[in-house]
Every structure is written in structure tokens, then in C-alpha cells.
Image (tube, rainbow, N blue to C red):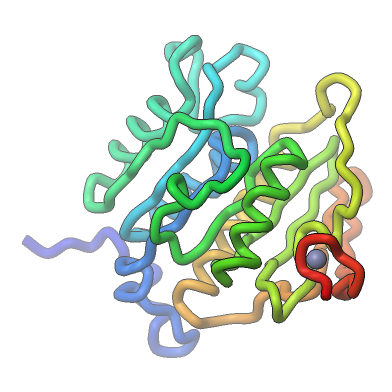
Length: 238
Ligand SMILES: [Zn+2]
């Protein structure tokens, strides 16, 4: 039987260098199944990334549901990885979904396995530092995303070619109380992370290397900041 699942994106192979075959061979590690991880995972699964490892260690709470569209009211209390795996497998049963119920800290190599790319959908700096150290050691790049309120940011992190996450966030910090966020902000930035991943995995399009793209939905302004490696960075410097 003819399978037209990817037909609309295969139309891009001729003029845009898109490659369904490359996507199908790729493995992506999605760090976090929350606000950013939801749209990122959904679009990467829909696009046919061959294997998606999705990692989280939380239960679904009702306050998650304004933005975490992988989850739903009927699955309150369920582990986020279990919920994510179920909905992604339902969306696309032709790919491998591997849920990892774990906290990212220390050396995450065992969680990340043989992933070609890491999607940073995290909400804490310590876990970001952990995937950053892994990325520096292995040269597996990271698509970083972050959100606050109506605004968000994204960058393609590929040390040693680019600044690392710690060059961008040199200090560990902890927000006081929950960060405010409009769900649509997570939708926009998470979708942009999926877009960046698809370009990298198919060797097509331009990547946000050494650039921090900032989108402010409140004013509809966006800008690209040029990033520089910090020669004194404790992670990638020297
Ligand atoms: Zn650095």
C-alpha cells in the first residue's frame, strides 16, 4: 500500500535539499517533555525522525496544561514520559519512541545513547550544564530553547565551532517561583527548535550558530544577537 505520510515534505527534496531518508535514519534526544518538549517532539515525530528519545521525570499536573500539549486532562498524574510516548506513538507508529523517566544531572551519556542531536527543552540550568558538558565532550550539538512570558529564545550550540550554553549562561541561577508563560510562546519556540533540528538532520537550510534568536510575542519584535565564545568559559574555554 502506498504510504503518503510524508508526501508534503518530500516535495521539498528537489529545491530545498530536504531529505526524508536522512530524517528517518536520525536519532534525537529531547531533554524535557514539557512546554518546549511538547511541540518539538510532536513535530519531530510527525516529520518522521527515526528514533526519538524523550526524557523527563515529572508527573502531569493541571498547571502544566496551558502549554504542555503532549498531555491532557484525562492523563493528570501520569508520568510525562509515559503520556508523551503514548501520544507520539499514536501520531506516528512508524518511528521508534523511547521514553526515559530520569532526572538529567551528572553525566547524561547513558540517557542520550547514540543521539545525533539534543533538543534542550529544559527548565533548569543545572541540567543544561550537564547536556552542555556532554555536547563539548562528544560534539553532539544542542538546539537550545528558553521561554519567559510572551518571549523566547533559540540558538544552535555546536562546540567547539560555536559558543556553548555556559558561554551564554555563565552563572547558575534559580528563578523565584514559577516562571510566567503563555502557552503559545512555548508553541512558537518549541516549533522553531523542531525546525532547527530538521535542518540540521537533513543538512539543509541555515542554522542559528553563534546566534541567539529572540522573539517577543508581546511586541511582535524579533532580533538575532551575535554570540561569542568566552575564552574563559569554565566549560569550553582554554
Ligand atoms: Zn563555553
